[in-house]
Image 1 (cartoon, rainbow, N blue to C red):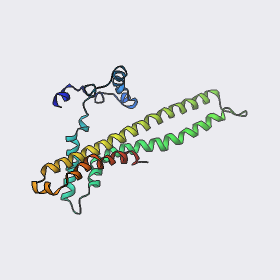
Image 2 (image 1 turned 30 degrees about the horizontal axis):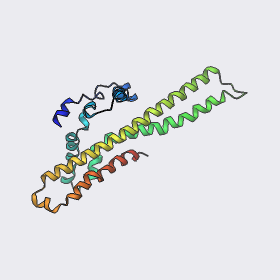
Image 3 (image 1 turned 45 degrees about the vertical axis):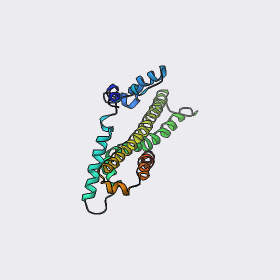
Image 4 (image 1 turned 90 degrees about the vertical axis):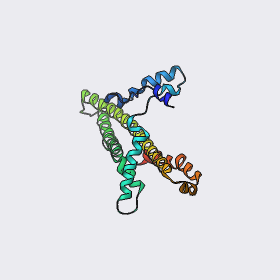
Amino acid sequence: MESIRRKLAPNPRESANFLSVLTFWWTIDLFKKGYTKVLELQDLFRPLEVDKSDALGDRLEKKWFAQQSGPGRPSLIKAIFKTFWWEYTVLGFIAIFNDIFIRLAQPIFLGLLLQYFRRDSNVSRESALYYAGVIVGLNALSVISINQYILGSFQNGMKVRIAVCSVIYRKALRLSRTALGDTAPGKVVNLLSNDVNRFDIVSVFLHS
């Protein structure tokens, strides 16, 4: 695994500019390679530093220890929220921008454009072209914002899942032999393989 890790190319997302991130242009080279050959593990990129399990586990574990030392019963949900609140806040702003501003503006400008085709219309041809251009721009912004929201939701779900798995694994390493004997292996396997996958689904529908 260490040899494969050294062979992986740097992630182009790290050096991508703002426009490349918005349009996912940084993925073009990977799609070109996948078009000409069957992709293998060596064709993929290194994970981003913020997506590595040790970094995510450290972030969640820090908030979890704070929950344990604080008053009241520790809550994993609160620890997750305090760890990833910024990521979900950004997604919330993207959802608000798309659902309120773009979706409300589209029918308004469409109505203005349709007025041009009335017989008694006083809308000029230049204004109609302007309205049409705005509609095209709004549709493009809608496509970009929706895809950024969906990708960001899955990425946040992945981060939460990896962080929780990392914390569970660290907890298992700290257990004594007696505690390990009292813990059913199937329960731990079920936590790591099935239960944590719920975070992927929750992240997508959280702002719906």
